[in-house]
Structure formats: structure tokens, C-alpha cells
Image (tube, rainbow over all chains, first blue to last red; front, top):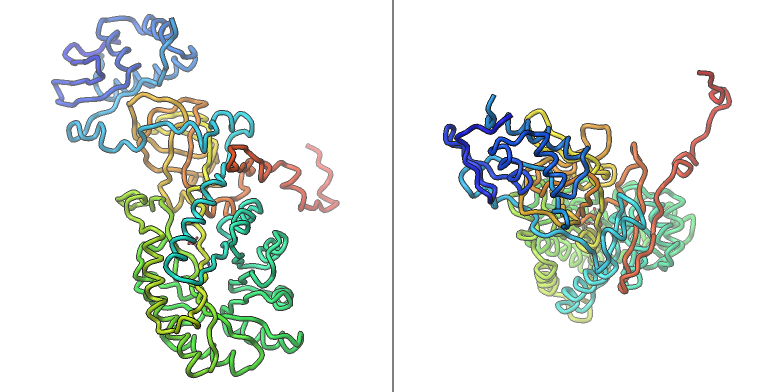
Length: 80
Length: 452
Ligand SMILES: Cc1ncc(COP(=O)(O)O)c(C=O)c1O
């Protein structure tokens, strides 16, 4: 799963989709995930990285990642 | 290296430009302590959910209200509205401060007696007073506020039987420009019913008519309505004096001053649009001083304020059980405190604060309670930082009516603690248990055996 190529992300958590004109605001953990997705990092590796950097239980992160990817899909930000 | 604070990843579409990013944010600061006591510590010691009452705030509110009236009018007496919160510890704080008791049932009446309130400082309101309860009140010299003609005649008969003169007032209902008009309690002013009741009381010779009472509504946002009420009760007091040769010793204006809560559906937060106690005091005392009574015959002003004195002294602490996504994509957060504990969430958009640090990112969400019932919604829509399972929240301004209208429904009622003025916590009502709830139940013999 990859982020669409043309999606603009900023480190401050501002996301812009030029094809729809929609903009989004994300929180720091989401911004981190998006950065890594954009660089083409695989989901499993992203999970490892987040676990390493943040104070979070693996079960919890897994649940959250699933929810977040669903949100990205709903927002039409993912490459099919 | 210390790991960073985690918060569930979240993405939110920005509608209408950047405005939305900051526009609807309701909470900027976590609330980590109440009166200097850490929320986490209280919850660790007393469990979750947990009601917390601030003695300091109760006393401050009371003293402020007394000051507002006494600096404007010489004779003022407050009577604590028991139904607003009748935990004995709460009642005792008000009684220590000098407040009488205002009760609306035999149960509340006995509570007041149990709290040590002298009978002649108990105001007995309400549409139902049994013969037995009235007898107790008459013998104690309590102030009996008559609600309807049936009660008036009931008292005439009782006074004969007891050979005592009950001390009475009537409750008056009237048009004060407030809709809906509360005309189900007491005798109507405009159609002459109130004066007719007063005439009957005096003509009977069986009772001592000493006061006039009204309670024009609750969460009143208009000071004018009270000015109108004062005028109308004042008119009745004059008529009692001139036509019935009876001087009215007190005018009781009931309760009704709003707390700083936000009514559901209102655009402005309560803190921005409710008049202060001083503004009500100004309208009421101006009205009283203009009634034309001489300085020596000014009636005592009685107030039965409830919610304004205690709402902001009460907090409900709760924990996050779970987060989920609804079919339309909205976030839903489930708390361990529901409408069974928070009756007022039907009326108010309660302010809710996280009790721990959070990032500046927030989301619109629904807050549900733990009940397996569709009605269990604490906030239909609230913008909050993302809450993790186990996080704590503080629900504000829950001191009025919740600790009396709460239900033992699906869940039991939790601990209630009081923080005293020195910052010590005291358990004032222990969490219920199964034994407590089942204690009044009886099992018919034939239902005892089961064989599954
Ligand atoms: C007779 C009477 N007095 C006082 C009160 C207290 O009202 P509030 O909490 O609005 O001040 C009530 C509440 O309904 C009431 O019925």
C-alpha cells in the first residue's frame, strides 16, 4: 500500500491532495506514518519504526494502523 | 532515549479552509488536578468512574450568593434545595454555612431532621404531603407551603385534630413572561386563585399565614422574570395586609438561577450568557425595596437556590474503555460513565477535559457511556484530542441533580468523594454493590430452585 504520488505532505501535519483540492490535518504519529508511506516503506517496517520511537503497545498500534489505513483509503489517498 | 508520547494516528479533512483546524476546539489544557489533588491519584484510590465534590467551591458559591443579596437587602435567608443534591455531607456544608432546608417529600423532610435542621427552619414544598408527614411538620413548626386546595382543606382538618396552628405559605404560579409557564404547582396569580386561597386560609382561623412562595422555573436566563415575580407576590402581600389584615413575614422566590453549564443546542457556552447571581440579586432586591413596605415591615427574602450553588463544585471522573469508528467514519469514544450517572447530559453539553497531556491535534467525536442502550450518549458531538484506552477524562459542572437523579440501571453507582478545604479527600458515599442493590428484594419460595 502506497500513498498516491502527487499527495503533498508537510512535517507540520498538513496534507494536500491536488487532484481533489482537499486538504487534511494530521497529528504527529499520523504525519510520521505518512512520511514513511511516501518513502515507500512497507507497513510492517513502519510498525517496527513506530514501536521503536513511541510509547505504545504492539496490539494497540496494530489496531490503530488498521483504522488509519482505512481512513486513508476512505479519503482516497492510497494507490490501489 | 526516552520514547515519544503516543497518540492514535488521525487524519481530518479541513472544511472551509484553515478555520476548522482551530475553530471548534473546545479544550486546550488537560485538567490534571482538582483543588490541588491529582485526578490520577483520586482514581487510583477510589476507582473509576468517580464523583468528586469540592467543599471549597460549595462554600465559595454559597458565600458569594449570600453576599450578593445581603449587601443589597437587610433580611435574607437561603434554604438548601435538597433534591438538587441531598448527600448528607453536602447538606451539612450548607447548614454549617447557615442555610435552612427546602424539601419536597417526607423522605427529604426526614433527611433534613436527621441532619440536625430545627423543624422551624425546614420549608416543606411539593404537591404530595401525607397526613403523617404534615403532622410531623405541624408539630415541628415547619414552614408548610401549600400547593393545592385539597392540601389546604387537609391542613384545616389536621389542625383541628392536632389542635395546633400550622405555619403556612402558599405556592403561587404566575405569568412572568417565561415560556412554558409553570402553572402545575401552586395557585395561579392572574386568575385570582392565589388570593382566594389566601382568603380561605385567613378565614379558616386555623392556620398562621406567614409567607408567599413561588418557583418560576429553573435555569432562568432572565432577571426580569424575577422582578415580575417580586411585583406579583408583593401585590398579594399588600392585599393580605390591607384586605385580610395579615402581614406577610417572608417572600420566598424559590430557586432557578442558572449554573454556567451550556444548555444543549445553545450557540453560546453557558459561561458567556448566563446572568450572575449579582444581576439576579439586583433585580430582586430593587423590586422588593420598591414594594412600599416600611423599613420595619420589610419581608424576609428566602431563596431556595439549587444548581447555581453546587453545579460547578461537582466533577465526574471517568476512563476511556474503547475507541471505535462508526459507519459514517466518525470516531466514537466509550467511557465507563454513562447517562445512568449523568442525567444532566440530557440537558447540557457538559464540558469534558482530558486529564493527561495531549497533542494539539483534535477530532470531532461522539462520547458514549458503557450502557448497552442506545440512549447512552454523553456528548453527541465534541471536539477533543484523541483519547486512548485507559485515558482519564473530567466531566465538569455535574454537582446539581446528578447525585439525586442517577439511576441504578445496568451499572451500580460509584464512589462519591469530597475534597475538603485542606485538600484531604473523604469518601461521602460508597460505591454500591450487588448486596446493597438486592437487599430490598424478596424471593417467592416456589422460584428458589432452578435446574438448568
Ligand atoms: C420548589 C423548588 N425550589 C427550589 C428548586 C431549586 O431550583 P434550582 O436548582 O433551579 O435553583 C426547585 C427545583 O426544581 C424547586 O422545585
